[in-house]
Length: 246
Length: 246
DNA sequence: TCAAAAGTGTTCTTGATACACCCATGC
DNA sequence: GCATGGGTGTATCAAGAACACTTTTGA
Image 1 (tube, rainbow over the protein chains, first blue to last red):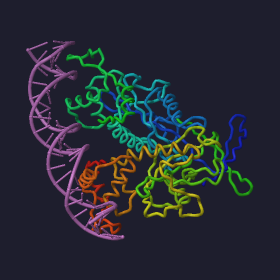
Image 2 (image 1 turned 180 degrees about the vertical axis):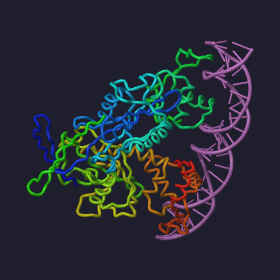
Image 3 (image 1 turned 90 degrees about the vertical axis):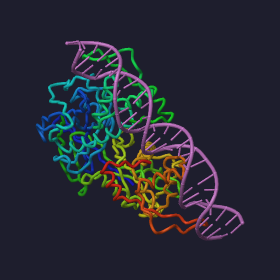
Image 4 (image 1 turned 60 degrees about the horizontal axis):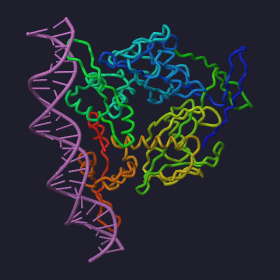
């Protein structure tokens, strides 16, 4: 059974800040976001360079403290917006990391999220202030602060697992896309080669892609048919027991 | 970027308790455990009756506060042991619930875990003290404290998803089991009927079950072959890219 | 000898895989 | 006219689904 007697007493300090006191010490709660983007057929992650200690100057995942009046997911979205300028992206809870010494200062528990962004529809670098944000290829990730490498590894495993049985991959492409782009996406995420004809047969067989009247108009080759994902139809089919798969 | 200036100052209070104060208010951190067990072919959940406010007298998930010096998973195991007497069970992180008003007292963020216990090898009721613990069938779960119904729903979805592509179902059976018991387990979890011959063909085809020299000796019918799960072989196969499935 | 659960194979259907050439365009 | 990526169909193979009767035991 729970024992729960935090005595909250707010006392003024230096005229501005309040102090919040509890009977037992509490862990600080943060969020960290693994932001995936697809850049020219390559899977990348958005990192920011820390301006403060600890790990000052090191690269890290965007994230920060959860405020007491906001949801954890809200905190993740807020921090993403503040630190990278990204808004309205696909965001899903990943895992909560609570090793005792993962932060050298004190006990910090971090709820990690992963985000999928349509890189083509968002500016390639941090849009907000002069924050040092940069996209790193998966195979060129530098040494990171805290346990952020582990968080990224977890996120990648999750993404690879999930992309196969839920249509979240589309979140990495722009609204309109070609089948080749879609195939490239899966090849980049899953690190495999896929057969073009079989891939098309399967994905078109689901009847979840709506062919548009437009075609691409670029490059010295045949223009490609553009499609968009039929989210409405998908959620309808899902209710009826349909399962998206690869 | 993070801003981080918790001023920790411990001051004596009433001669015994310390007060821990921070510059910003902090959420309390708890764990909650959804404990699944298989009782006579039926999937059940272990609940405890709350002895303290809020929700005094209501049924709830076992759980409690995370101490500042222990891992979240450690907290989950400790609370499980304290409240239900269960130890050495399969335990996996489920999801972190952080709605602002999920606890009427103050902001509480809870990391939920789910556990799978071999009910046959653990006493059917809470073994510790006079704690009011009881196993409930999935379709007879009473109204619960906090958002615990939602946590259970999430856990059930997860269990149903995971049991099909990872051999965690065995955690619900005793070490030695018959194929019928295994099939019943899957039928109970997935809420479907499975074909006996196809089920056996598939599961035996994986070569992950070791037939024992024993057979069951009970009931007025033909004795059944006993098996045990070959965990070593599974982890070896998994490394080589093998995928368990249904 | 009856009830109750254990155990066992084959056919059919469906989906997965493998594979090579023509098309439309810009330069 | 050539380089570039877009687009298409069939044959084979493997896995999933459907399906009914015999065996062993205790009472």
